[in-house]
Image 1 (cartoon, rainbow, N blue to C red):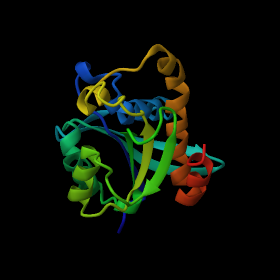
Image 2 (image 1 turned 90 degrees about the vertical axis):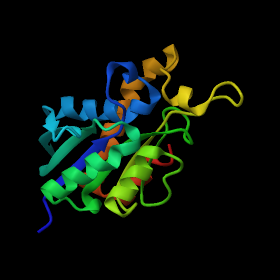
Image 3 (image 1 turned 90 degrees about the horizontal axis):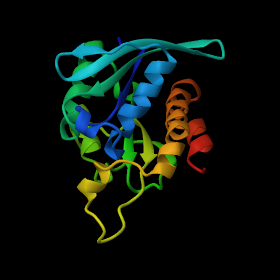
Image 4 (image 1 turned 180 degrees about the vertical axis):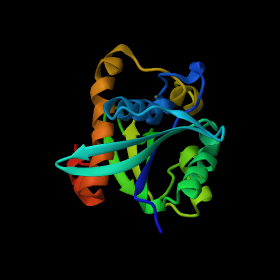
Length: 196
C-alpha cells in the first residue's frame, strides 16, 4: 500500500562553504518549511537529513517527510530513492525544490515531469526513481552574464544585497507553492505561481 506521506526534498550541497549559495535554494526553502511546521531533522542512513511533520491547512491535514540530501547535488537521487523505498512513497507524492537558472530571480515555476534542464540534481533523481514524473518547485536564480562567469561559480555564488532583501519573501513563496501542491494539486498551484 502506498504511503499517506508526501516527501518534500529540498536540494543543495551540504557544508558551510555552500550555505546561502544559489544552488542551495532547495535547502533554504526546506528550512522555511521546517520552521513553519516545527520539523526536526535527523540523519537518514548518512544520505539525508530527514524530518517528519504534519501540516494543517483549511481543516485538512497532510503528513510529510522533509529531506535535505547530504549526498551533494549530483547524487541527490540516492537519498530521495532511499527515503521513498524505506517509507513506500510513490513518485506522485514526491516534491523536489531546486534552483533554476532558466528563471529570473524571484520567479517560481511548478511542474511535474519534463526534462531536467541541465540540472544535475534532477537528472540524478530521474535516474534513481526511474521516472521524471514527480512535482518540482523551480526557484529562479537567474543566469550569469555571458562571458562574465561560468555556471559553476554562478550557482555556487551568493546573492547580492538587493536579492538578499527579497530572499525571505521568495523562500516563503517557494514554501507556499510546495504546500499548495499537496493541498490544492499541481494544476491550481501552476495557475497561481507560474504566471507571476
